[in-house]
Image 1 (cartoon, one colour):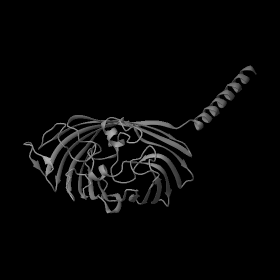
Image 2 (spheres, one colour):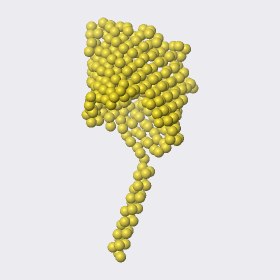
Image 3 (tube, one colour):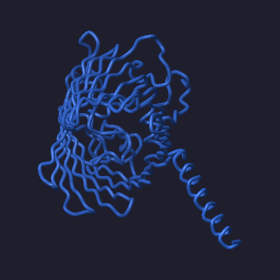
Image 4 (cartoon, one colour):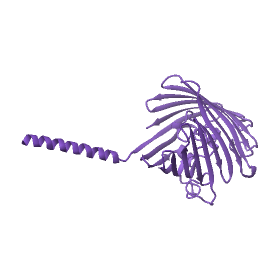
Length: 345
């Protein structure tokens, strides 16, 4: 009898522990930490390499010699109904992405917040997000893990990086979606300094997206999409038009991103971009009205575990003599080479 009682008690205890453990597992918070680190080497092929020389007018990968990208730490909690994202960046790429806060820190102290928002899944088809989130415009993103090329395009560099506000993501069908947003004026990521607001919308159909941003200072429309031509060949597309308030300065451009996977560990891609300043916007840096630039970037992606090695050759050709050659004479083109290491965890 004693043995039977002990066996029954042991079985009951095991069952209770298992049920208790399962109950604990169900209520366990689903928190994760991810991110990346990146660094690179960059060299001009037909121009000097020093800090006083102007590199391509696009963002991030424009420092000479061995240079740092950033550390990106992303804390995420995904609940059944609610969750949050805290995305922090440290390093030159991160500081360029979020600026030195122009309102709360006019002295130039860098802001480390790339994204900071909470969300609520109101239903299976509606999600509300409040806070600071990366822009819905454009083909490229701030994190180097989300781009094929390491250097960035002119359209990405001079479009908005992030917004602060509230947005609603609505699933219209299996292949269609709609996003509507009310936000602070562009670049006012910590608070609203003047009481004006921007409005954004995105219509997605089969992974093709039409984006509209109505800001107090400008209007921008953007198309971002792509097609799988085959199992190994992908063609990405981005086109954008920005017009300043009262027909002020702006820009427009188009870029193609053909990418071909030669194996499971290596892919090669080409970004071709035509970018035009509509007025003296300063995007290219020539200071000349209606300047244009055509950029061709050949990039390889070689994956070693969680590490991506990215060699890249880039040629920028401007309509005006803006770049310097090795003799410090002005010319209309700049060729450069870089190799980057991006580790994702």
